[in-house]
Image (cartoon, one colour):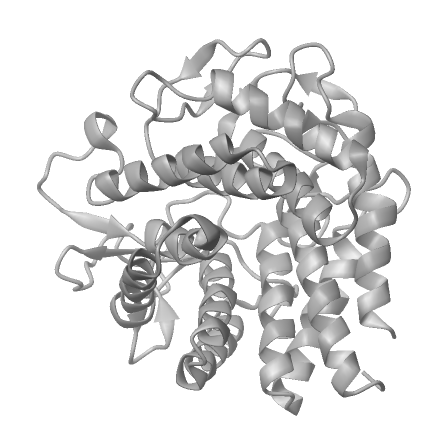
Length: 389
């Protein structure tokens, strides 16, 4: 199979047309993300991190695939909506707003901000509008100010059990590369060093080669629901971020360690009975508190494919190939909707669609097209070296 053409075709002839046709709000700007199986809008609320992700996606396509005026127009509609309605007076980004842009849910964490910074940076490069680059940098700096207490006044804890979460250093390791054109080298390397240390030395456990979602402030593990939580998808996504950093810094040791870690995560997270990668797991095998723990999610499998493709590019051995084939077969035989386009997001443990939606509060125009693009580009490089792949 010509994998690069396979992924390119899926991206440009299936997934992107679905969002172009169904998600654009031509009245108020921004995007609808709550789309049913057929692309019909079933809720008009706008979730800021999904708005930002779609701005990023269409800006990236315009930059790296083709300078299509329609793609830039779609990105512009979202960027302007995000700038005008996405944040409060302090520059903190809401979680959600109404269709018209009125605030619904306050800025209770900084993940909306992270994706807004990515969006503004990519849109600035696509449009040439330098003000968006400034906005991207300011948003990034605001994130750094809040990184030690990301939820601020919205933190539910009492201070009795101080845990820190894996998501922020993981996101920062990718975000800093997205903003590379807008930051000085010292700032870039400082954030890279912080992220790599947190991901690979603090949250990654040397004995198990697994990444925990939460650790105590001092880096120790805690025997509790949160302290035992494993999210294989997060670990796999982080590993391809680490590979990208390893490429940037010519750090072959980091690339090797990231590759070995992803293989450990896959071996641990693979459902031996029904196939696919489990959503949440308990490190000690206890029942997880998440009722959806045994579902199979679209983004988890896509991140695994990206990670494996990037790993294979740098270490084309049989173990990685076997894992890639295994994940590829499961993913492509379960998630895409060949009749109505795009992908299902949520399968039950047996691999049947749990929800028929194509977009909602958590799934938007991001993980599917980003992964298809990443795999397309990675396999194109691999095939230049080995045309038989």
